[in-house]
Image 1 (tube, rainbow, N blue to C red):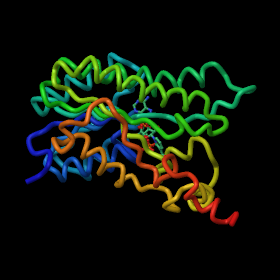
Image 2: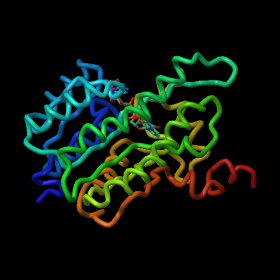
Image 3: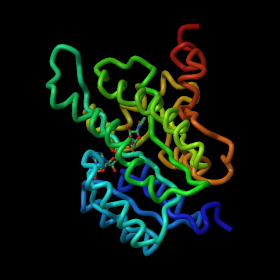
Length: 258
Ligand code: NAP
């Protein structure tokens, strides 16, 4: 028996990284999954790879009409909607002193407005026991330079989850935030030219578990939040970052100072 037997999930940004790993795990646990993204080539290849329990829809989270259309397709295809993983996000750098308004606004539009309207589009179909998962980031709180818009957007996501949990608790709908630390996904190409190995060597020094995370490790926590295993977990966030936020002094960089 799978943990998500009979359930239908919508995963935004399901054609890459954390969303893709989660789509694979959800299907393995018995769910039917609709993935969205903008890149049709990646959407088609994932749908082909994962088979008939996955349906791919091209939809831009920054366009509420496109998300409403995606939700209608979920219900038309699989008959219901139980889990919303509002995971799509972008990470463009916004250094103070040289940032264009359009770049700053795009980050907020995708990461904040897009998340809100994804949940709003899904809401008419969500019933008692439904689970909404938002993707935050440890960047919300770690003060990483040149990340004003991204950090603000992810802080907003965690704040928004608390409000949504309050508003949707009377309907028995849970809303929580999954908060990844540095994870090995293609998102890093947006903000660095470093090869992944070089990036990891840099980041690992500040992570007590001495490595970046794999998207599959995030997917397992998304599964927990999506399933009834987390039936009393509401309005909170789960940080999955190898200990970087909770125990920074356990990171290798401090050992090297001894
Ligand atoms: P990723 O592989 O780049 O995935 C991002 C996904 O978002 C892609 O599927 C992308 O699909 C989709 N997306 C971006 N803009 C979109 C838009 N306007 N409309 C629809 N889909 C859009 O990166 P990831 O690391 O898995 O990112 C997933 C989430 O985790 C993001 O919210 C990110 O901020 C968060 N996160 C990642 C890390 C990390 O270290 N990797 C750490 C903390 C938080 P298309 O390109 O096809 O649109």
